[in-house]
Image (cartoon, rainbow, N blue to C red; front, side):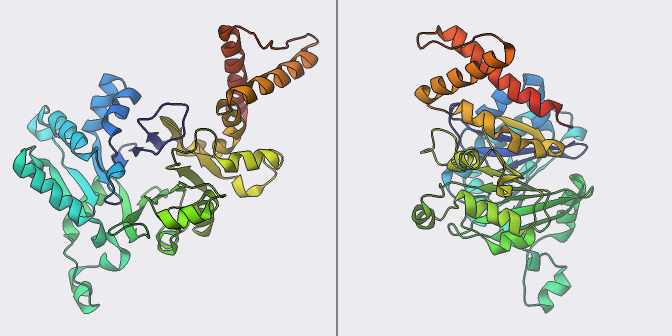
Length: 368
């Protein structure tokens, strides 16, 4: 079963500007979608030392969506770690890594390699993201007759697809900055993942992502700040959800939240005010958070976590009120009295919070 991870260097309480998203494909390989500054450290925190080494042994592809530093500043460190682990393997077990990125970033990598030789020539196989736009993914004879002059090595690209058991990988330009791309990957077993990078709502992304299993989309700006979203070329949560629904995605995972959001995103509060799930708009929507790990078969559970997020991200005063109300309800149900006092010891309060979160998790785990 496929697993999706999101990583961030920020504290667990805060919803993150995600430094990377990782995909583990059974009997295929691992993929990194973007590679921010904290990627390598986050991978070390996520895995045990043996799992960390195994992850890099099986890392096959990195996709960099655009040239902003928060999406590629960790790339060199990840490549160094990958090459170090690959060089420790016997010659017949070493594997190349495929990089899909804007051509300017690829050029800068090789310029860096001239200053510090990290053996890119021995391990890196780069593809310019512009060559994977659907109309460019044509055999050379068709490309010339249709006016496109793609320099994509079709044989090498087919070898990449075979190594990860993929049917297609397509990109599209998205409105954010020069050379900004989204990507769609389709596996031979039928699942399809779409990743937006940073962007305004993109019809092209909806087209290459049609009938996706999962759309991972940025939702940087709150719905209450549409002007800010337009000025900064990002999406509000409603805009991100609308693109996911337009491509008929089975699941939508929102990520890349603004650092201004020190608690749960506004749309979760909206969901709460409308009666905990009465609004079908959010029925297939999940929130990415620090070190999230989820199997694709469990994506349907993510909307059930909204209530737990409410508790987790409440401000301290609001949390006390919430805990008092919930403990009073629990006391009535159990025939006893469990009211939390304002001067309750920290350990006791923490214990009650954990019991509440475990209650939510248990409910999710028992749903058939």
